[in-house]
Image (tube, rainbow, N blue to C red; front, side):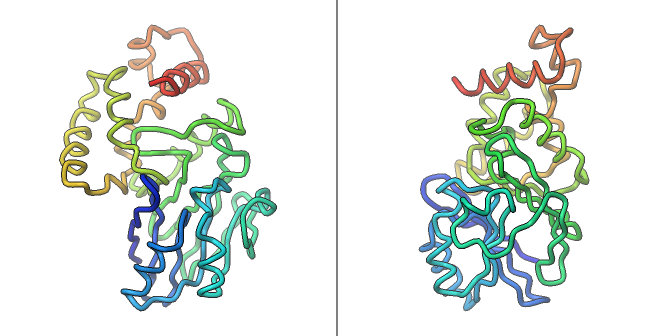
Length: 253
């Protein structure tokens, strides 16, 4: 299975999923149709499925045109069926759906929006996390609350540590700067930031990231760790309180 990031709008990523074994092709979160059509035309591929992690315009903007052109099926969370254009197949939390021969588990991860989901390809250990988990960051909280977002991040943390994370935006450099401000002695973070600098200097994607690396470097995934609480002078605070503090700081960074 091949995953190809397609840059859309200014900093969005859509992802082409090409499973040559089952001859199944999908796209995750097409914010616009033109770059998707261009890629598929060059590769002579037909689009079977459109997967949406949530309903925001910069993740569903290409749905209707792509569906019309390729007769693709649109996949989304049952709780968002009224907000995802062209939806055909609605899935519940923890439901298994098959992409060709590959089982995909749907994880409901509210916080950024109430109907946000992650698509986890179990055999390949690939997770499309939309705007919930970014490389070295997490999404803003628009519809849900901080507790929901932390619970959703904790759910992603339970995936296999070698899971590849494909998120919705190229925010990594800015996220790294924020993490460095409050976690500057983190050796894993420093090493990751150097790699990020080189990639972005060449205008290359920083995605995918690996979950085990995020667990060491992403400040939003370390709210339960004592060394971070000490750095923030929050030793006696609950994990949720630490997360809320960090998320609030990021909102004004």
